[in-house]
Length: 68
Image (cartoon, rainbow, N blue to C red):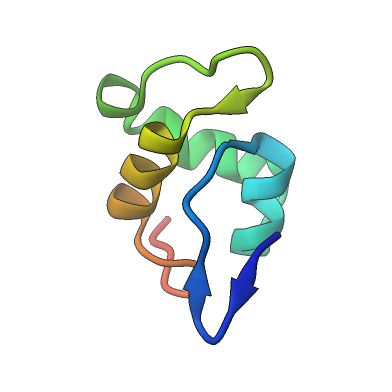
């Protein structure tokens, strides 16, 4: 996880890494992302691409300000 001075590095992340960034369980982050499947799309292997991570951050808000 790369959070420094309230900035988060946009790079490929796994579900577990995203869950850790948002401070939630894997199940919760999956449910949040599922609501935006059309915009996010499928993972490439076990990681979301940089573009997908950017979309996830845009849709869910910055960590600490996530909406359920």
